Length: 394
Ligand SMILES: Nc1ncnc2c1ncn2[C@@H]1O[C@H](COP(=O)(O)OP(=O)(O)O)[C@@H](O)[C@H]1O
Ligand SMILES: O=C(OP(=O)(O)O)[C@H](O)COP(=O)(O)O
Image (cartoon, rainbow, N blue to C red; front, side):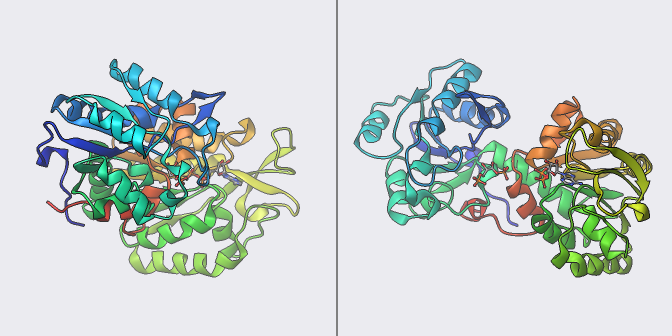
């Protein structure tokens, strides 16, 4: 992928900038419960304001499906942004129309305006050209800093770039740089850890990773499709029956490519998907009928921690078990701790994996925690991200 122009490559003074950010943050009782994505956008916003731009911020929040929904307004996100910037942020209740145009016309250089949730308009997710044009008429330039939404071809992430020049913000630049380097010029041994529950979403990533990595560690719900492919009984564990053949082909591909593919050798199994279930640890070929694997076992965790410690680059997407429940948290915790202790460059992608490293208090020991789940996965799969494709090449 060619390098994209950034806000450093353009003159911002006096310019009206439509800056797409990803303020799709977790909310609880009307408050922002995790402001990671807001904090991640601060360097771009501060830089543009300091350079004299009129900064018009736009984001989605949740999936309102084309209607205004009070609980999905960006008011609380705007308040948090103002606190973090220690600067006024004018929040509007609309993202297009006369009031917005008037507010933009009144902006002075360095002012910051936050538009309402762009998904209140059905045209946003349809990438409607008319809506994109209305966004574009507000500004002289489009800055995309919403890495977390870069895999979406929507009016405010992609369509708008048909009408005004488009460059990336610093967060977008950093995410593409870190993830791009990890894939194109990796330090070795290069290890990828894939887990979690979205088997269908992740199985495609594995194919691409097998062309790049030295070690591939499989854990979480994903691993039982592989152990089934190896011929073991999996009881009631999560298995994607129609992906077993694909898993077999990956086991074969790993051999051909000389990639060390690690599968669990033991599992923590339970007689129900519940914190209060009866729990025991078994060898991977001894999962009893009616029981389900909900975490990697201690021997697997130790083996995976060793590989992590002997790597130079590790990327991790998807927890090793149902870490939200105490009896099944240990595998994910041990992997998180190994990630914190290794000298390797460590990259975390995916909402639940990021939550896991937060929970185990090691987030600040990771080299890069990506703000994008779906976006980082699609990027790692080698897919084009529409929100990046539309940006001007250097
Ligand atoms: N063995 C398992 N069986 C069922 N669910 C699992 C298992 N291991 C992990 N999970 C669940 O997977 C979820 C995260 O999966 P996923 O969404 O794919 O990860 P991420 O958000 O990091 O990409 C967690 O909520 C976790 O409880
Ligand atoms: O939270 C997001 O994605 P993620 O959960 O995959 O990181 C992005 O803001 C995209 O949101 P969407 O999946 O509703 O398009």
